[in-house]
Length: 231
Length: 228
Image (tube, rainbow over all chains, first blue to last red; front, side):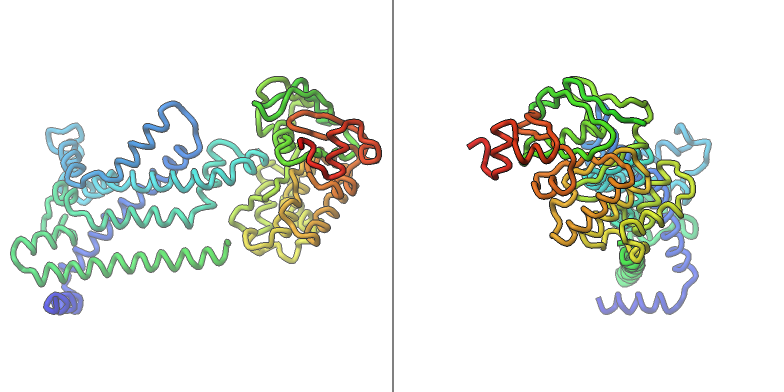
C-alpha cells in the first residue's frame, strides 16, 4: 500500500504526459456521457413523473431495473451496433472515444432518469395544485418543477458520474484500451494489474479516486452556495 | 365578468352530495363547516382543480382561468426570491409590465423589504402574505381562499385578514373556506354552511349566527359536535 501511494505520488509528480492524457481522456469521456445522459434523462424522468399514460408503470419498473445494467453487456451491444457488419458500422466509431461516450451514456441514462423521476414525482405532489391554479400545465409545469429542484437533481447526476468514471467493462470492449487513443484510467488499471505491476495499478487507482473526489467536492460546494442563495 | 358562477347538481365521489348554488359578484362568501364537511373539495370544484363526478360547473364567460386565483392553506413557493415568485405568476398569465406589478403587489401586502429574500426561508405568515401578493398581482375577479390562516398564529392571522379585507375593498369577490367562526363573522357577508358533504344552509352572516335555520348549523355555532 505504501508502495502504491509512493507510485501515485511519483506518477503525479512526474507529470508524465501519458498519464495526463489518460486522465484527460477519462474525464472527457465520462463528463461527455454525463452531459448527454443528463440532457436526455432529466426530461425523460420529469415526463414519466408528471404524465399519465397507459404502460407508464411497467416503464418505471423497467427504468429502475436498467439502473443495474451490466457494463459488459452494454459494451457488447454497442460493439455489435458499431462493428463493421453492424447497423451503425458505417460511422466508423468503434475503438474511438466516441464509442466509449455512447456506451457510457446508455449505461447511466437509466440512473439519471430513474432518480430524476422519483425526485420530480415527490415534488409534484406538493406543486401540482399550485401550478395548475396559476395556469402552468404540461411541459412547462414539468420544467418548472425540474428547475425548482435542480439542486436535488445534482445527486442523481453525480450518481451517473460515479458509475461512468468507475466502470471498465463497457469502455474496454468498445474502446479497445488502445494506448494514446482510447486508454482511460480504469482500463489502464486493469491492464497494469494483469501485467503484474500492482503498485502502478494502485497508484492509478488512487489518482482516479482523487479526481472523482475533487469533482464531488466541487459539486457539493456549488450546491451549498446555490441553496444559501435560493433557499 | 366571469361571475356569476353556477353549480348545477354538482357532486364529488362520496365526499360532496349533489348541490346547486350560484355565486354572485359582490358580498364575501364564507364556506363554513367542520373538518371533513367538504369545504376544500367544493372550493376545488369551483376553482376547476377537480372535475365533478356529476353535474356542471359553469361561469358566465369562457376565459375563466386567468381571472380567478386561489390561495391554499399551505402556500407552495418556488425556490426563488419572493419577487420572482410573484413575477413568475404574472409571466405565466402573460401580464404586461410584470416587474412593476410585482413590486406593487409586494408593497400591497407589506413585503417590499423582503422582496429579494428566498421565498422558502420566509416565515409561515410571510409566505401566506406572499401567496396573497401572488394572487393580488393577477387582479383576479374572484379569489378563492382555502383556510388561509389555519396554520398561523394570531398576529399573522390578523395580518392576513387585513390583506383579505383590502382585496374585498378593491372589488375582488372573496370566496373563503374556514372552520373559524370569528373569522367568518369578521370577513364574511354571507355563509354557506356545509355538513357532511351537504349544503344545509345559506344565509347572510348576521342572520346565520343570530338565528340559524337548521339544527346542524345551530349546533356548530354553539360549538357542539353535531353528530353526537
